[in-house]
Length: 125
Image (cartoon, rainbow, N blue to C red; front, side, top):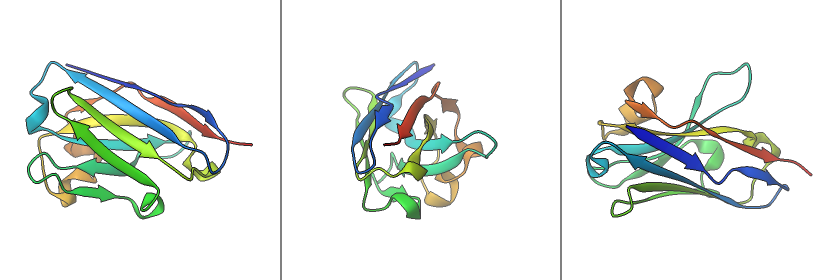
């Protein structure tokens, strides 16, 4: 099993980035996919997720209206489009795969079976 996340980088406030995460080694279409982020000294926090069952999307409040999660089952890939980036978005971003499909489970790190290696996003002028 492998999740490879890429697309991070340095961007100015107000800018955009698109993260991608390519999965292999498991049946992608029956896993919900999520994005989490972490800064040093803090717990990993939920950012966004997309249920495999009904394709509903869920976001943490601080990114609603700015971030969009999407998935392409044909390419085994999940994306996170991040617009209007703010310095507070600076973190290492991780993609993850979960066999669950409801928000109450998908917002929790312990409900995810597989994790990518993380990609750094830095928002700074």
